[in-house]
Amino acid sequence: MSTSYEVLVLGSGPAGYYSALSCARGGLSTAIVENSLWGGTGFATGCLPAKLKLDGIRSHTSLDLISDHIHEVSKKLQRQLKEAGVSVYHSEGIFTDRNSYKINDRILHAKKIIVATGSEPSCLKGSKFSEKIISHKEALTLKKVPDNILIVGGDVEGIEFASLFSQMGTKVTVVELLSQILPGYDRDLVGPVIRELQNRNVDILCSTEVQSLRDLASEITVVTNKGDISCDLVLVTGLRKNSLPRGLKELGVKIENDSIIVDDNFETSLQGIFAVGDINGILGMAGAAVQQAIQLGDYLLSGEQINLDYSILPRAVFSIPQISGGGLQEKDISSKYKVKKFQLNESWRAMYKQSHAGFVKIIVDADEVIRGIWFVGENAEVHGSSAALILKNKTTINDLRRDLYIHPTDFESVFEAGIL
Image (cartoon, rainbow, N blue to C red):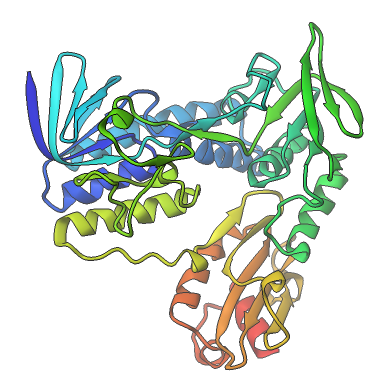
């Protein structure tokens, strides 16, 4: 049995989901295949459920209810795909040629195939995942809150889980190979996160290398260059391996370090096969995957060339407090730039709200064009996406002075920082 489509999408994470929706809503006959849990890492097993659990901590919601809600994500995703006219398949599969993909006894033919199969957690070299050595997938489905946990990696994933577990009363130790946690972020942005973690009795060990893990009957021994550490659980973060679909290598698609090489329009070395999201190795962030998917859909529909500027991509750390923003940071700039800051607790809105620790930071060039804007605070995520629009439009400080704002709001702090 065979079925033909104009577009076939492999994978249902953010990249696959938005690829399928964009194509189907544009009028292309579209199918999607998922071989595991609908929603992938971004929606089902990583990014979104981790934030839901952190939201549950902040609002004192039952974590069981949050877990129940996670299962609804997959149902919602499938429903919206079907409503958009996407044919939905759940099966393992294999490429048989550049335009054909076999699932069970059915061959799916497509003029264009989009590979959006994402990535999976990878363990430390010489170790493997077990009941006591876990990835984010197992961490989000634990039946019991652990007494103590050691998190390998002080990256975004590691620090978000450090915030989560420490808020639940778990004794947390973070081990980071580099000299600071959250590398890539200015120290003043990270400082409030460190202070909150330390207030929660989190031990942060930087410049520390995990050399091996000893999985014993009653505990785990983590061997580091600074001594051994015993714990109940080890959570390994920041290590991932791409999930290449079966049969793709045999077709001759160019692959380097398990990433599919693509051109500016996300087309692989084989005409008609595209790759978006983690699998192309460009940038392992859900926001980037979504935009790659949407712009690829536009390209397939109209031929509009893809143009993504990752330098202004907004980012967020869903720690407690949160960090968000985009563009340049102080570590990137020279003396020709100016840095403007405004403390959130000095805003008018702070008179009405109890928690206002944090600040907004704006970086401007010699022409007073905003080149970076960053937020630290309880709800920084709300404002981070606005950074991309401000940067893309080359907004100036004078534009901020002359713009209109809702009063009183946290976002007025951007205006306040600009007029200082």
